[in-house]
Image (cartoon, rainbow, N blue to C red; front, side, top):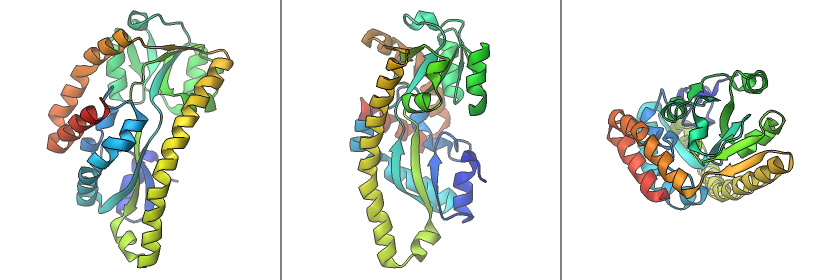
Length: 262
């Protein structure tokens, strides 16, 4: 009964004791924790788990505890976001004048900077919009692209590894402390056990989804190293603008993400 954008608030008010929080969806509540929505801030799932997640655990919990009396007990990420298109692409120049369904302001701004435009539509409208030509493409990871049968409406993908969708399992602090000590230890032990499983399973799922989509007729074109450098240059003002408004926590979190994942 709850929207993704409401999860943090309902955990904080103990309407539920625990929830999966997608930081991109709660950017209005904790804008300083949305650093990984900045294009190319972190594009490696391995580096996220090995280096970045441990480095940002403390600042994340400082914000969650201060604003929502909650704490993150596990972080995880979805595979990289790609651009799925109804038209072939031969590089960055091919994106001019194209309309792409974007998850957030940053993706829409990137499209503007390459000469296209970003469109905001609900998930349920994405496939019909692609079918009717309302949009020329959509940003999402390979796993949901396969789940939503993008292969039936998009025959090309520009694999630019734009961002990782950053999520966390968040628990109300009072509820966590109210658990008997043995149960609390079991819960926390399970999160330590499951984080590596999320990593392994998501990496495998991304690889399998790409393979299946290719087998179903989607041409997957990797951005060349030169294109990646150029895309990062084009997108830099987006991160700079965000960091100037995100306060010290957000600015530091973005810097740590870039350093950890480079």
